[in-house]
Length: 255
Length: 71
Length: 222
Image (cartoon, rainbow over the protein chains, first blue to last red):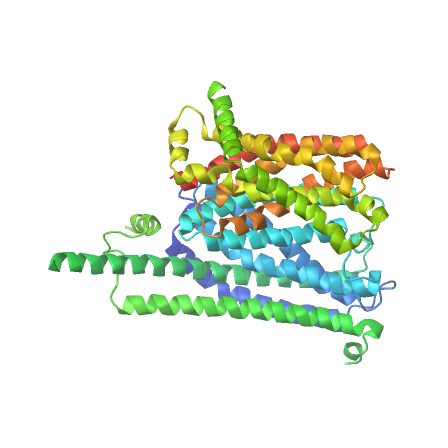
C-alpha cells in the first residue's frame, strides 16, 4: 500500500470519508442552490440577447456547463481509474463508479441542449462535426463503462476492469476528437469559439461563469452523495456476507 | 417578467432546452437520493438485526481490509 | 520469441481447423454488404460513393463477431492458465492471440473485400487502395478487440457488451481508413497524410493494446 499518512491516505478509510463528506455536503448543497438561483436570475434578467444569435444564446448558459462537466466527469473517472490501478486506493473505485451516471447525464444534456441550440442556429438538430461526434462517443464510453460495472458482480474485479477500459478510452478520446476534426476540415462547422474569445462581453461572461460554478458545485454534491451511497452499499454487502457466514457456522455447529 | 416572456421567435427551443435540463437533472437527483436512502435503510436494518462487521470471521476482502485498517 | 511464434501458429491452426469462425465471418460480411444496396436502392452512383464506408463498417462488424473467441475457448478448457504460467509474459500472450485473430479472421475478410467491392461498384482505381488501407487498419481492429475480449471474458452476455465497449474505440481507424480511400476516389485531400495516420494508429494500438489486454486477463485468471 502506498498509503502515506497524508490526506489521501486518510481518505482511504471509508469512515473518515463518510465523516468528512457528511460535514462538507450541507454547505456545498446550500452553495449550489444559491449559485443556481443567482445564475438563473442573471441569465434571464441580466444577460442581453447576443447580437448575432438573439435570445437563443440563453441555451449556452446550460449547454456550456453541461459540456464542461461531461469532460470533467470523464477526467475524474480517468484519474480515479489510474489511482485505482496503480495505488489501489480504496476510494478511487468508488469515485470512478459514482461519477459515471452523473457524467453520462451531463453528456446527454450537452447533446440535447446542443442540438436544440443547433436547430435555430444551423437549421439542423445534428451535424456530424468533430465536437458533436466526439461528445456522442464520450456518451457511448460512459454507457460502456456503466454496462461493464453492471456485468461484473464482484466489485473489486469490476472496478479494475472498468479502470482499464476508462484509461483505454481516455487515450482514445483525443484521437477521436482529432480524427473527426481533421475529417471535416472541408466544411468547417459553426463553432462556439467566438463566444470563448476574450472579447466576450461581461454581461454574458458573468452569468456564464456563475452557471459554470453552479453546475460544477451540483456535480460535486451529486458525486459525493453517490460516493457515500457506494460506500454504504459495500458495507451492506459485507454485512450480508457475514450474516450468511454466521448462519452457516450456526448450521455447522448444530450438525 | 418582461424578459422572461419575450424570448423571441426561438422561445420554444430555449424552453425545451431548459425543460430537458430540469427533467434530466431532477431524474438524476431523485435517483441518487432514492439510492442513498435505500442503502441507508438496508444498513440500518442489518445493524438492527445485530449483524456486526468487526466480529465477522470472514467477509469480502474489501471488508477485511477496512476492518484491518480500523483496528 | 520462439514461444510467441508457436502460440500464434497454434491459434491460427485451431481457428482454421475449426472452420466455423472464418466462414461465419466471411458469410456475415457478404450478407451485410449485400443487404445494404437492397435497403438503399440500386443506384450505382450512390453505391460507389458510399462503398468505402459500407465495406469498412461491415468489416468491423464481421470482425467483431469473432473477437469474443480470442480468449474464450482457452479460458473454458483451462489452456489459458497453463499458457499464463508458461515462459511468455502475459502481454506477449495477448499480443500473440490478437495477431492470430488478425491472420485467421482479419486477413480473409480483407481478401474478400475487393470481391464485395464489385457488388458496390467501387471505382477501379480504388481496389488496391482498399486492400492497402484494410491490411493496414485491420490489425488495430483485432488488437483493440482483444482488449474488449479480455475485459468481458467469462461474462454472461459478454458478446453484446463487447460490441458496446469496443465499437466506440474503432472510430479513429474507421475514419482514417475511409478518408484515405476517399482521398483517392474523390480527392482533393492527400491520400498519404490519412494513410500515415492510419499506420500510426495501428502501430500504437499494436504496442499498447496488449498491455491493457494483459491487465484485463490478470483479473480473470486471478
